[in-house]
Amino acid sequence: MTGPAAPDLPPLGLTGAYRMRWKRRRMLWRALRARRQMQKTADRTRQIPNAGVLVFTVLRNEITRLPYFLEHYRRLGAAHFLVVDNGSDDGSAELLAEQPDVSLWRAEGSYRDTRFGLDWLGWLLIRHGHGRWCLTVDADELLVYPGMDAHGLDDLTRLLEQQGRAGFGALMLDLYPKGPLGDRTYAPGQDPGEVLQWFDEGPYRAVRQQPKGNLWVQGGARERVFFQDQPERSPTLNKLPLVRWNRRYAYINSTHSMLPRQLNMLYDGPGGEAPSGVLLHTKFLPEIVSKSATEKQRQQHFHTPQEFDVYYDRITEAPDMWHAGSVRYRGPDQLAALGLMTPLAW
Image (cartoon, rainbow, N blue to C red; front, side):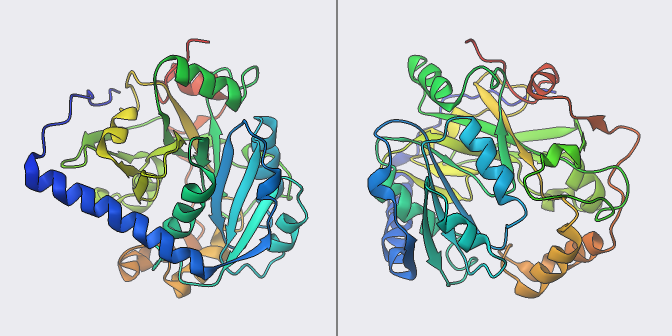
């Protein structure tokens, strides 16, 4: 398994450079406008420490995942959480409002119309992330990297700074159970890896797209199970979650790509040479079966949601994602040995 080389970006020319500049400015303007949709629920931003990594996320109804999500990133040394709650009604907002290291905003607007929450998070990154290391993740994403038991996020960002790097890429790796989806039990606060013990070590394929130079990684378990007949529509698995932020930066498509476009060269995919980690994707906890039926009705998670109705229907059938090629998850060092992330020179 090899990632594509990270060549120098080809010049855009005057017209291309103009278009990229205005695209970035439109994204920043959208973020500025989106701040009007956000109401402060628990504003502890004055208590944010002067140093340390800030964690940004937007979520809805994640009461079962939140206890471990917070524990995981606290264990890695996160300095503060900045969270946008998109109309939760399961107690998520109440739980978050009680946390001393969480600042919380409520936004009732459309998740899809705000570029899947990027406009809301864009404003928080502008307002609170400038000059700081910022980790932007979903509630079902747990960042892991080689040596994390001994080296927290502060050590990781210090290493990246010593190497002159402004960010850290990651492969989103789907974890899944053995047996039908929804057949296991999961308790809030439990390590999801105790329920979701398996993953696909490959195949993954990566291409670098122009003109932004962003990577496009596809493959893995979801493609094998749900998109075998249409692999071109399978989920994008590359992300740039950890970035030393500047208010001029903008995420374009989730955390898959960024502007200015040079930032996209920070990650060269599985098998690449750039320092990287893995986002353990815990989407397939037992609640996925009922949640998929709800999300099919809400139509909020895809640009053309009707095209993915079959995907949701397939999940509600509770398939068994395990197959003979499944690999049991043993930890970050295992993923590095498989080439799914890059060893770090501590």
